[in-house]
Amino acid sequence: MKRTKILILAFISILYSRDFTISDPPMIYIYHFMSYDTTSILLHGGSQDESKSKFLKFPLFNKDDTSFGSYFSKHGENLLMKPLDPKLVSAMVTSAVARNPHVHIAGESIQKRIKTDNFLSLVKSYDYPQRTDYIIIGEINTLASQYEMDLKLIDVSTQKIIASESFNLEFDSMKNLRSKINALVGPLMDKIVAPYIGSVYLRVDSTSRHKIRWDDISIRPLKSFVGSRNLDTKNSDYAPYLTMLMPNKFLESHDEILSQFDDSDYKLVKSYEEINTFLAGNYRIKAFLKNNETPFVTDFVVKAGDLNEIHMVLPTKDTDGDGIMDDFDACPLVPGLPNEDADLHGCPLPLLIGNITILNIWDGVGFEISSINDISDTLIAWGSKKNNQIDFHSDPYQHLINLENNSVTIFDLPLGKYYRDSFSITEERFPAKQYVNLFADNDSLFLKVGGEEIKTSISDRDLIKGREIIIYFDPFTPEIDHKYRLYVDKSLFAVTSVLGELHIIGMPFSYEGSIRATRKGFKDAIIEIKPGNKKSYHIADLTIPNQTLELNKPPKVPKSLSVLSGLLQMLFD
Image (cartoon, rainbow, N blue to C red; front, side, top):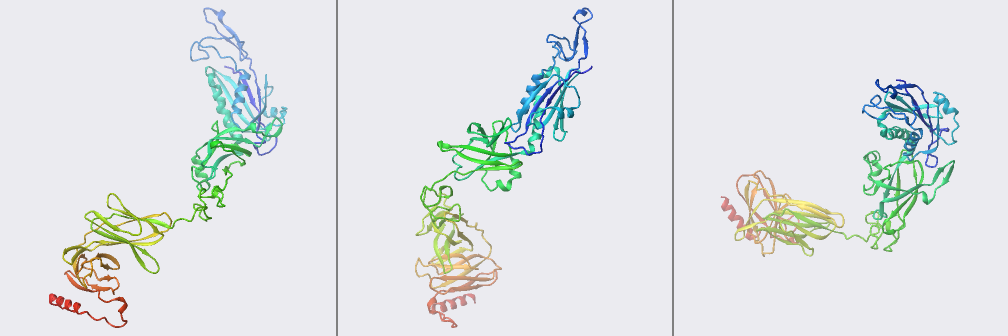
């Protein structure tokens, strides 16, 4: 079958090499024309009644020309399609071009026929408006029972076809014509503007994050091309915009920039048509605020290819009168002092205190907290747990024992270094005779920042198989509140009173080292331990006052210790 041609031209020409901007956008001239093939055909009316036969010329049907049957349609008794109205196609092409907000339409023209197939010659000869930019040539032909459409994008300045698309459409599928045209014209428009567009995100800070209405903003270009003139815009030219979460593609491509900010402090700007790009150029934004506060207005620049930022910084005041503006004041309602730390700038000097929490306090453990400084160590809190009850002392500091009786928190300790000792509490099985399972655990603690809480957990106790070490003390602890403290390898493992002898259970058979016994105000007793499998007996002399020590002279052995030593010797023999 011979075919009928219907041609549509959409002209968009670049006459000069330039960068498109919002004040000088791509201008589109749409030029429609048709070329008719007046081939004559006979539609047979049937062998019984040839009077129903019709003689038609394609595509110049009269409005009453009809044909029944399935010659052109696969759907049976359907009306033969009439030729496309050039005005209808023109309107669809114009609408498709206008869907892209970054291009403008300079004008359009509809011609009855084309006298040449040389489109480039036509481009050169046609008298377009002065501001036109590219050409899209659309050619629609009829073939069998369908329309065939081809679109070509031509750069008039270079006289080159830079893109070409096509589609076909059944006669009885004309309802899909608009979507088909949109599908072809849209990508061609995108191809034109792609090198000249950028995206914009709005970022807030401490001055604005609680005031902004993210989806109540308006934007207008500072200049706009109207007709042949480049004019300043007015407030009436503002258009409403929305915002959206930043897409992953920008989070990946601009991570070094965006990672500096909290992800709730910035959003991408988009139009109500879900378009999130802007033609390069100068713009003005008006962002409306909560509680009817004065809108935020500022100018910004869009650079092609970039993710461009609008930083929303609101005018501020000094509410607390400390000389630091509220937008930079971390404590705007409380007078404070300058500080290099942004989180403390404008705040009063912080209280230099913190808390320490001791965890995993099990039955049978004793524990102490000491303050460490360059001069001395000071015991500031101590306690133990026996029969599932915690006995704890921390005067003058407040403390709190939890409901489960397995942790305690000491409040408002001065910043500094602390040390935790943990040990097994001794058990008095006979008068003045104490027993203890060997256990020692400690931890170094450092309160550095005001308001900080440090948690330290006591290790679980593992019963160790080993031998028994018996230590006899001279003197017995004089009073019930007098304490003897015992260390193994510098780790505290027992604190006890009312003591004559101490039985240490679980000393490793292979251990070789020393046990140090201390009594406040007296010289420490050092007890050397050798490896072995049997019980060993030792004496701890805690009778020599520190202030009476004489250098280079061995201390005298007290009479009571001499007697005790003799008894031990008889026992060993």
